[in-house]
Each structure stands twice: as structure tokens, then as C-alpha cells.
Image 1 (cartoon, rainbow, N blue to C red):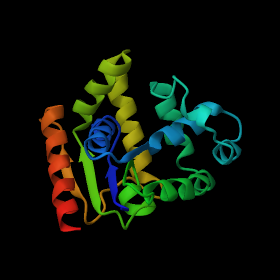
Image 2 (tube, rainbow, N blue to C red; image 1 turned 90 degrees about the vertical axis):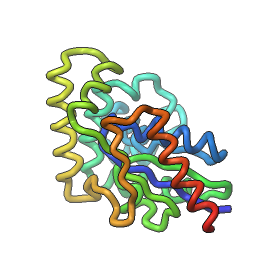
Image 3 (cartoon, helix red, strand yellow; image 1 turned 45 degrees about the vertical axis):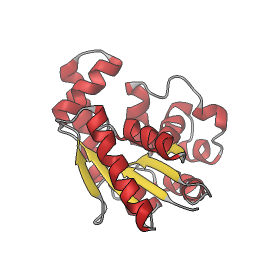
Image 4 (cartoon, rainbow, N blue to C red; image 1 turned 60 degrees about the horizontal axis):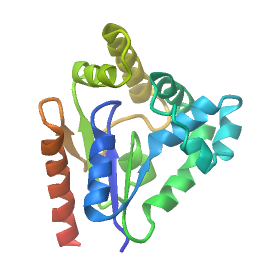
Length: 196
């Protein structure tokens, strides 16, 4: 069975947590596409060459969840040649047998417009900054500024800007627990699986 769940949204909205939970629940493969861009960003050097030469070891680095890696990912994600180098890898992963969940910023709009389920997971900038601050520490005011800066860059880029697909279901996690957000996503996927 080929079944793709595309989950998009801004940083720290909960899409990674929801994606992993959905993949576990249904036995689907999971790809955090942001890790691809984070790996390219932290690899350094020419980002296009880094994207073309990405290895499994690059994706296993333990510094990929840092604030610096997130900022680096956002900077290299605006480069069309980097996006092109990673596009086919993501599309092949998405249409693999057994089902797949991909989370990122342009999965439902660019990578997998044919996905069987499209979710857009979001939350207010303040809530997302607080979550990120709990994860990485530092000055919470600075983290909020960086979240807003990244949102502007991700939503304003010319190539594949962050936005909800027209047919995506929006899940705002600002006032939801993890369990509630996951339950909503699981229910949407279950309903679509029954219909297929």
C-alpha cells in the first residue's frame, strides 16, 4: 500500500512529535525533512554540494536539533539548487510501499501534492518560542525574535514558501496537549485509510 501523510507547519508547532506518533501508530516510515536541511546547513561549505552529497551519517549528527542548526537550515532552504537536490529523495521516500509520514514546510504543497492526508500544524509564535526555549534554553526573548525571523524567512521565500496546502486540515496546537493534537491527527488519518 502506498499512503502518504504530509505534515507541514512552522518551527516548534508540534509537527515532529505528531509525525512520529502517527508513523508509530500506523507502522509507516517517517522522514523529518527538516533534518535534511539541518544536516546541509551544519555540514558547512558549499550548501549545494553538501545537499548532493548528503549521507546517512550526516542525518545522524547529534547537533541537528540545536537552535543554530535550525537557523542554518532556514538559510540553506531558500537556495533553489539545495531544494532541487533534496526533492527526489523526499518524493521517493513518500511513495514507498507500506506508507510514509513526512514532516516539513512544503510537503503538502510541493513535495507531495498528491498525499492522501495533508495536515498543517501550527501554534502562536509565543507558544512556539516558549516550547523551543524549553528545548534549547537561552534567552526566551531572543528565541521569540528568532522564531519570528525564521517564520518571515520561511513564509517569504520565493521557492516553496511555508503555507498550508489548500486541502490541508489545520491543527492549531496552541491550546492542545500533545495527546489531544496526536489524537486529532490519528483520527484524520484513520478516516482517510477507511475511505481508501
